[in-house]
Image (cartoon, rainbow, N blue to C red; front, side, top):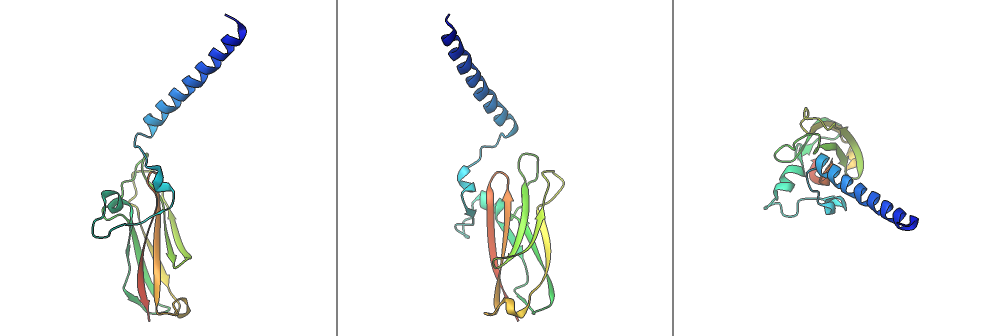
Length: 159
């Protein structure tokens, strides 16, 4: 066997072995197949009357009063999904964020352990100048390591 043929064969063998072992590693430690399109943008409920199981488990649910008085404290609870999202080493919620319109109001970062329920409570006090039209939009977002960025919003009145 000449030297050039030997080197080509050795390199090709090394590359194929590396690809096979990488695939085996990925399938062992990340057994859930991921839809990569979920990471291309912001995921929202497409049809509120017919939510898919993925939407029911990932869209943030915002619980807040319909109307609040300017300057008074109130609580906003954000839960991940109608049925709380599971938390485990292979599938977890990385963080929950709350925005008042486009302004960040708070963020809770979570660990990939099974001890937490992906839910957060934020305490807010809105000023009258934050809602010239009399209403404010609260936006909740969460990041799932397997299913990307999910968002929902509600409007509340400010008196």
